[in-house]
Image (cartoon, rainbow, N blue to C red):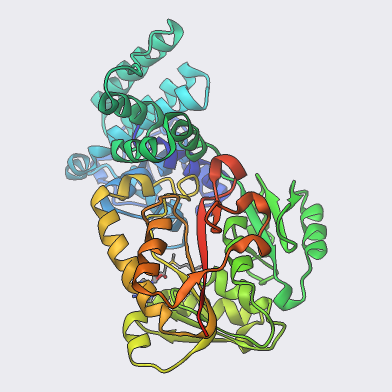
Length: 486
Ligand SMILES: C[S@@+](CC[C@H](N)C(=O)[O-])C[C@H]1O[C@@H](n2cnc3c(N)ncnc32)[C@H](O)[C@@H]1O
């Protein structure tokens, strides 16, 4: 069950995607004939006459390979849909490969097929015997007859348990550790995360958070005012596309949507730079910075540029955002998007490690944003793979890095200027604790409470910004606004 959640994302993405066209699939699917003229993959000639039922679901096939690649190769779920390596056509080719040696290497696929079956039966509530049938077929085509039999036996056992309401689910009893393990299984999260959240949030809220992480993510679009596109213009476009949406309660340029992102993409709204996909929680971090025309702003960890672009669009052509990032490729994306969004006149890109940049530079700006590398524990509903890639040991390393970056960023703030530290984490050790430690090291900075910049609902007792997924139904995010003494 470990990756069933990412499967969910992939399935819905693939339903609308055309990285392999339905036209090409028609050639291969729903035919109960021998494979005679394969168009992809290295089919062994000896199989040309093999009678194989190819009536397999392409979505399942692509999903199974993608899940395997995420698990074994660390592929990012959200990058798998780009052309090339991750294209659906490639993965279908993988499935249609009938070389005996490849079978051995493909074995982990069996696990993914079983996971898909479990997910469809338990979570998607699909007709169970159809699911068994489809996945058995898939295992037979992709692996071998015996693999199909195994899928059949396991999924049928599951269906039986479901019918008799006798699923052997772990019980929420015993000591903390045992309960955490049970919750981890029930809600498909790593045990260390469950233990951490239970400690920080209490068990009830930890469960709500896991349920949120497992739910369908919603998305927000930001109308690109830098290009003269108003929210009303964006709403008109969405109406034409018949994409259901509602206006953001918190941000004037934002629109929320639960479904229809694929339609927005296919209609070219992003490609034309009319809008960006940006969560309101990230937009509210920009509200905390509160960019004003004429100001100089350093964005220390800027790429791929979500916040840089939004800040630039608020400058009305006056002022400058210096976008610094250590990752050249991501910075290039930022630069290209800035052009597309017609805000490149107020953005300069600087490829550098902010730590050496600030050491060797006398630059002092009105405002400095440090959107620090973090665990991403606030965005797990959109990053289904992240929970399994993130390790407890990462947290210590991240905290050290965040401290170093904060020290470096502070050097770029002019006297009387503002430093904003933000993360997309809900973990106090990456948020409040980093600020407390920073203020001890830097007595020339103090907290500037953010009540003036965001709705009261997002203001913590210490004057920080915090977006809580289970309270605000947005991604989790944190920001502290610190002002430097004159
Ligand atoms: C959370 S992401 C920033 C997201 C960005 N602010 C946005 O809104 O799109 C963190 C970024 O920090 C960058 N980064 C990590 N270490 C860095 C360093 N030492 N100096 C500069 N950038 C760094 C990473 O390359 C990554 O792009």
